[in-house]
Length: 162
Ligand SMILES: NC(=O)C1=CN([C@@H]2O[C@H](COP(=O)(O)OP(=O)(O)OC[C@H]3O[C@@H](n4cnc5c(N)ncnc54)[C@H](O)[C@@H]3O)[C@@H](O)[C@H]2O)C=CC1
Ligand SMILES: Cc1cc2nc3c(=O)[nH]c(=O)nc-3n(C[C@H](O)[C@H](O)[C@H](O)COP(=O)(O)O)c2cc1C
Image 1 (cartoon, protein in one colour):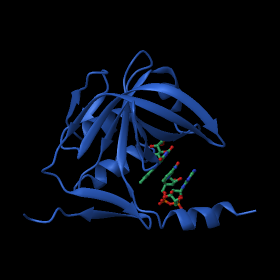
Image 2 (cartoon, helix red, strand yellow):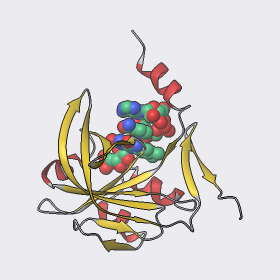
Image 3 (cartoon, helix red, strand yellow):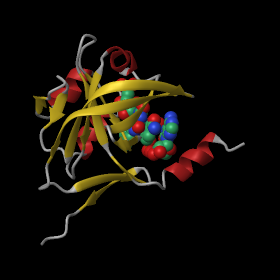
Image 4 (cartoon, helix red, strand yellow):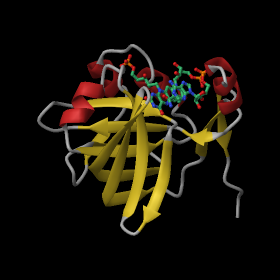
């Protein structure tokens, strides 16, 4: 049996993009920071997001039918901390500029990419819900540098100059 702490220590060695997952709809607006995001299939274009059911945002994401995965850029570290902590929702959103995407969910200005999705399926595993998300629209910003969560800290990824 692998201990939880041992698992987390090993998982901290897997670098991952940092994302702010937003939603809006009948249950209201919410957002949280997530590194557990992954591409599932490109036909139809689908990704997954793992959300802890004990998070304050869970009731909102479980009622709304859409979300947007906003992949963070270098410079978004403090915004990531805001959406990853015990911060009131209004403080989280007032710290950045947002547009409304096709799905109605907030899209972060200056994100590396924004994946606007409808939630197509939800599977519960252990403490988390896996949200399968089918793309309805996407935006890319190729002028930004990347941001990775590795070894419990942020690391900026610079694009090489041409
Ligand atoms: N998948 C998740 O739910 C994740 C949650 N977090 C949360 O963010 C905070 C800071 O995390 P770290 O500084 O990276 O240190 P940490 O020691 O809490 O986590 C190390 C690594 O373990 C994994 N992990 C952590 N909590 C998990 C969970 N409840 N379920 C599945 N995997 C989990 C993630 O890959 C994480 O980067 C913690 O409260 C952590 O729970 C962070 C990353 C992923
Ligand atoms: C870098 C980072 C990555 C995180 N990744 C996830 C994740 O993939 N899934 C998740 O459920 N929570 C993740 N969290 C934690 C949530 O962001 C946090 O629980 C969420 O903001 C809810 O907090 P609240 O209950 O105070 O509102 C992450 C936090 C940080 C700082």
